[in-house]
Length: 251
Image 1 (cartoon, rainbow, N blue to C red):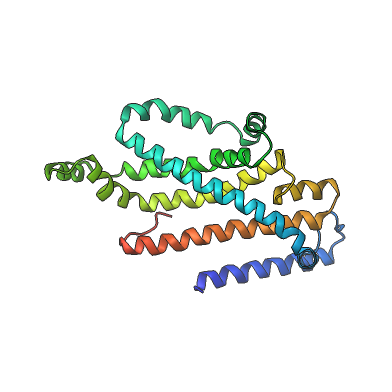
Image 2: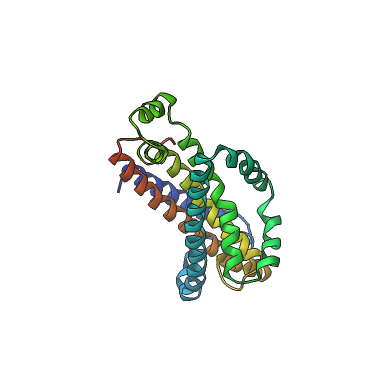
């Protein structure tokens, strides 16, 4: 474990301890803000019940996130090959991202029903954009002199993409990937808010309806754990791969 990881964990524990003490010294009702220790006890006692919902949300996130990666990569590659398609579809993609996902979600549910598919589509809608834009930026940083040199050596566009553009875009790819991972979790929760009978987002709604703050905060704890775990795995892959290409992260 690295020093920065130890520092992050220590800071989190310190924050939880301070919150525990502050709540105990205050007169804040439990249904508004429960003690962190009570939330942990609740999680321990109800883990079997919670785990089913954790698995549902995790499955939605992984499927939607995986597909969003494929969609972003395919669109970026297509637009690198065709500037005409880039001029046609890039404005449409950008405009689509101005629509709030909470407004788009009911439409997706209306069109595709109440199962897993609409939640996957919501995740793709909200998470692919930062990855796509970072890939486009990474693909386009190739210097003209480098491209001209490759062409003078009889390299075709495929060679330029595979040997120059893709390796140079890796730092941008991982930067977009980390942003997209967090957005994928948000997309899953939004989908579960709109229509679901399972999942951590659904539990938040149930907790609100029942005024059960322990249930709400337990769900938030697991959402935070899922987000940080996914982010950390991506960061680990980034460090390993960029070190191989002797590159540095851009953030």
